[in-house]
Length: 229
Image 1 (tube, one colour):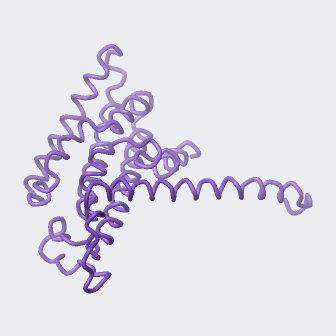
Image 2: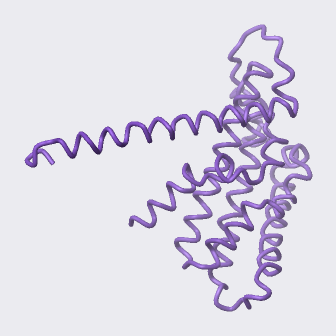
Image 3: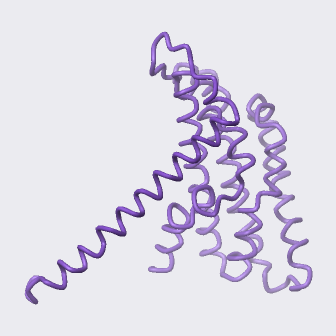
C-alpha cells in the first residue's frame, strides 16, 4: 500500500515530469496557448504512458536486455500511432491544431524514461499506476500552463471547448475579463517559458515551506507528553 502511495505522490508532485524532471518541454511549451489544447495533448500522453508501461511490463521477461530500447520505442510508436489515428477520426479539428506534437509523443523523454526506469523492472499493476500518475501529473501542468496563458493572453478560459466536447460545449467558454484587449506575449513562446517558470517557482516555494514546517512539527511531537503521542 505504501509503495502504491509513493507512486501516486511521485507522479503528481515529487517527481512530476513537467515540474521536477522537466521532460517533454517541447510539446508542453508549444501547445499550451489555451486549456483545451493542453487537455488534448495531456490525455493523449496519459493513454500513451498507461498503454506502453503496461505492455512493456507484461513483456519485460521476454525482451533481451541488449535490444530493450528499440523494442520500447517500437511499442511506444505503435501506441502513439493508434492514438493519432483515433484523434484524427474523432477529434479532427483538435488533431489539426496539435499537429506534429501528437506523433512527437514517441520521442517524449518522459515516456521512454518511465519505460526504462519503472515498467521494465516492475509488475503490471504498479507499472500501470505509474503511467497513470505520471500522465496525470503531466496533464495538470499542461492544463495549468494553458489556463494561465489563455487567461492572460485572451481573458478567457475553455475557449474552443467544442473541439473536444462537441458543438454543445461552445457555451463553456468563460469570459473572465470583459473588454480585455489581451496580453499577446502570454500567447507567444516567451510567455510559455515565463509561465512555466512561475509554476515551477510556486511548486518549489510550497516544498520549501513544507520543509520549514516539518522540523517544527517533529520538535512539537518530541516535546509532547508521552500520553499525547
